[in-house]
Amino acid sequence: MDPKNPNWRERDRFILSKGHGETALYAVLADMGFFPEELIRSSYRRGSCFLGGHPDKYIPGVEVTTGALGHGLGIACGLSLAAKMDDQKHIQFVLLGDSECTEGSVWEAAMFASKHALDNVIAIVDRNRIGSIDFTENFTTLEPFVDKWNAFGWDVHFCKGHDFDDITNAFHSARTSASRKPQLVIAETIKGKGISFVENNPAWHARSVSGDDEIQRAKQELKWREDGM
Image (cartoon, rainbow, N blue to C red; front, side, top):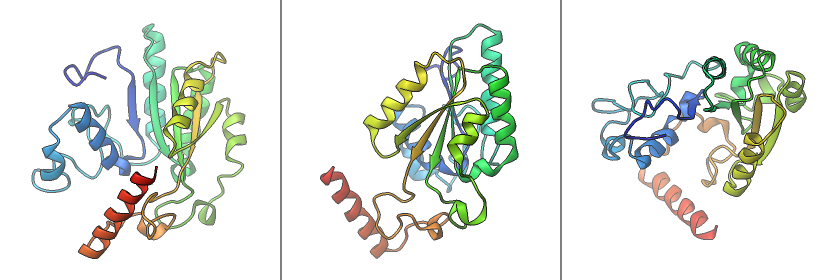
C-alpha cells in the first residue's frame, strides 16, 4: 500500500468485512499517512463524519464500503479471480468476524474460492466467540469450525490473535503455501482484551467506555498491560 498512490494497481488489497471494526482500521490508515491523524479526533462519527461507523470507499486506503456482514469474502474472491485473469500477483486479505460466518454468503464465497483455486486470497477470522448479543455458540453452531473450512477446500492456519510474532508466523505460512488452495487464518482473540471489565463480555459489543471513572480505569489497565508486556 502506498498512501501517495492508493490506487496503485499492484498493491495487495485489504477488506474489512467486519466493518464494525473500523476504529482500528482508521488508526492504522492514519498512522500510514492516508489521511491526517487529526481527522480521528475531529471527524470520527462527529462533525463532518468523514470517518463513519463503517468504512466507506471514499476514505483513502479503504478498498470497498463494508458493514453489511457477509459480503467481504465474496468481494475478495471476485478481486482474486480478476487478478488471476489479468495475470496479477497481488493478494486479497479479508477480515471476518466469527459470528459473521453464520451468513450463507460466506460459505458461497468459500466454495467459489475453492472451485477456482484462489490461492491469492487470505481470509482471517477473528475468533472471539462473541456476536452482537451473545456468545456465538448460544445462538448458532459454528463448531466444528475448522472441519467446515477444510471441507470447503481451504488450508487453515492458527494464531494467537494478540501475539504479533504468532500472527506473523501464521501469515508467512499462508503466503508460502504451495497447495494452490485459498488460505484461512483463525485468530484466537478475547473481545475487549486489556480492560478487565470489558473482556469477554457480550454486553460491551455496542457500548463505549464512558464517564471519567470508566475512562480512567481503562487507561490505567491498558497502560499496565502495555508496561507489563
